[in-house]
Image (cartoon, rainbow, N blue to C red):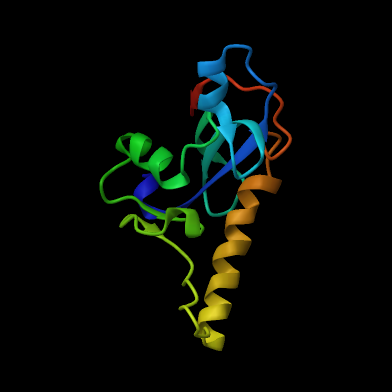
Length: 142
């Protein structure tokens, strides 16, 4: 049923308080954000109206593509996805075209990238679970 759609996948980090235990705090420290974070990944339908899957509460420093690969067995092997450059290199996910070093993208490539980024932003803005999550259970599947 879901394989007829190209699902949108996106991940984001949200701040959390610094854990007291030194080993624990190292696990949640994100150099990208400069603080301790939880990582959340959402997979939604292209319309942005329905959440298909959420993985929440993981340590922030985990990369988007690693998080996806750890959870992709929840979907059919033929399922297609769209995502941002954080998923570059994953066969199942269509990603924007990366600008070559010392090069430029064509107008058509820029337009295609704009379409991909617009759809991915739905994931963060269309749901009550979006960027303003303050606390989540570890894993949720719908």
